Each structure stands twice: as structure tokens, then as C-alpha cells.
Amino acid sequence: MSDDIEKSFKTLKETVPLLIKHKLSADPTNYALWYTYASNQSPSLNEAVDATLANVKSLSPVRTEDLYRAHVADKQEVNAWQLRKTMDAMVTEFTQSVKDTRKETNKFRQVMDKSLDGLQQVENEGWSVDEVMNFVRSMVKEGQKIRSSTLTFSAAMANAETEIKELKKKLEVSEKEALIDSLTELNNRRYFDAELSSAVANKEASLILVDVDHFKKFNDTHGHQMGDQVLKAVAKKLKDSCRDGAQAFRFGGEEFAILLPNNVLQRACHQSDVMRRAIEKISVKHRASGKTVSGITASFGVSSYENGVSGAKLIELADKHLYEAKRLGRNRVMPMR
Image (cartoon, rainbow, N blue to C red; front, side, top):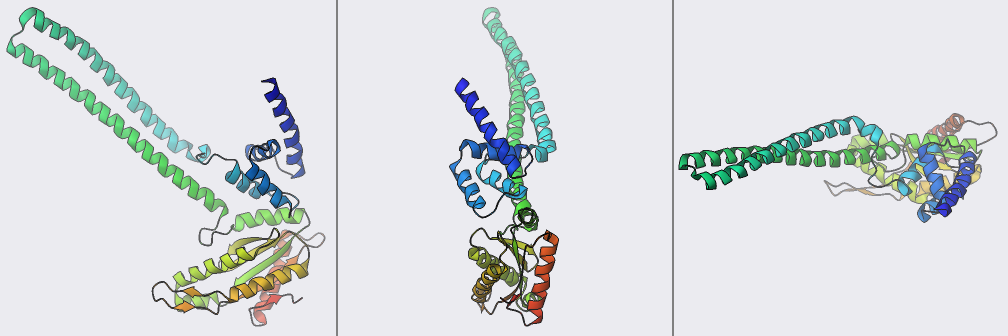
């Protein structure tokens, strides 16, 4: 027991400096993740954290939350804050069902005790046929009551179980939507904003903004379902092209963002051109007609961190270069390097 306490304090002493180093508050999620990391209880977590820190100096709060859900949180864990009202109502109803059933059961037990006494009287006193039939009818009536109560209780349990399963499904979806874009399955704008803020704070960031060329015209010509397929295909190419800590995000509409953990503009431009050529190879098959559509291209705008530049300024610079790429004919990377 004393060894466990000593080990806990040792892990605690290692956890707090990690929180300070990564500029994270000691809330339950952050503390649980770094305590688990320090204690080496989850090799998969340590591997994921080490791989991330090999490319960035620290973890953003959203990245921490993502790692916590993937490696620390119990897969069956539910968010009590979100479900409290619903669960409270369910528990109240369930408790009342238990009380009602218990009350009916006790009453039935009393009736049965009385009935057993009555049966003894039948034997001892020699009741008439009418007296015996009345006694049996009374027993049947009380039996029907307890059966009805039991069925109601069983139904309440079944309903509660079904509702809990549905709530868990909804919670899993809402948690995923909080960080992931549902169409492309890339990290979403909320995730991007947090990662960009962290990267700028660490003074190591290059940003690539990507816009699918003539997407509105494509949608008008081929339909929105084909448009969605194009966005999914572009997202996959961008994600597959990410290397050395680069991350792909759905920025909004037909726009994507790539965040790189370095300040080398030339390297970011080179990576952009690799992605641009990969997108040129995309072909999408129309599910209804079977027709294959190709010739998909995208324009790229790139910016890199310089002293004192904010995240908003990085976006502004990348967007300016993206506009220039479109103005010059699209399907190109700007600035040219």
C-alpha cells in the first residue's frame, strides 16, 4: 500500500511540470492525460504524444482533448453534464417503478400469507364449494395485479435500456462532430483554430489554404452529391499527402487548410505543389450514371510565421496568395518559389 502511495506521488510530481510546460490548466482531462502519460499506463498514448511532440513543441487544448478521448477515456464513458437532465428523469421514473413494484410485491406476499392460512382453514374447517371458489377468485385477482405490476416494471427497464443506448449513440456523434467534419472526416475549423493558436504561440507555423477550382460550376453541372464526392476525394488526397506533422482541416465550404509545424515557406510551397499534383489525378465516378469525372484542380495560398505575426495575419496572408493563384489562372501555388 505504501509503495502505491509513493508511486502515485512520484507520478504526480512528474505530471504537474508537464502541464506547466505545455501551458495547460490542471482540469480533469488535462490532468488525466498527463498523469497517464507520466505513469506510462498506456503505451499507445505515450507513442501518440511522443510522435506529436516530435513535430510540435506543445499540445493545444483541443489536441489534448482528442488524445484523451482516443487513449484515456473509457469507451463507454458518458458525459454526465450533457445527459444529466435526461438521466435524472429516467432514474426518477425507474425508481418509482421499483417502488410501485416493491409495494405490490409486499402486498402480494401478505395476500399469499393470508391465502396459505386460508388453505389451512379449508383443510381444518371443511369449507363449502362456494367458499373455496371465492377464495380461489381472490387469489387469481391478486395474482393478476402483481403480474401487471411486474410487466410494467419490465417495460420500464426495457425502455430505460433503449433510451440509454440511444443517448450514448447521440453523445458519440456529438463528441465526434465537436472535432471532426462529418462530410470529409478531416479535423474541423474548431480544431484548426486551436492548433493554429498553439503553433503561433510556439513560433513554428506554416499555413496552406486550398480552394477547389470552379467548385460552384461543378456543383451546378454535376449535382451536389457529386460535389460532396469531390470534396471527400480532395480531403483524402490532402490527408494522405501530409508528412512530418502536417495536419489537414476542413476550413469551410470547398476550402481546406494544411498546418505545418515549421517556418520554412519554401518547404510549405513544395508540399503544396505535391498536393496540387495529387489532386490533378483525382477521378470521381457518378454513382447513378456510372460516368467518371476528372480534371479536378485546386489553387493554393501559402504563408509562414514571422516574428510577431498572429494567427489571423497568417490566414490573411495565405488567403491573399490564394486569391492571387486564382487570378493568375488557378491550379497553382502562390507565392511561387
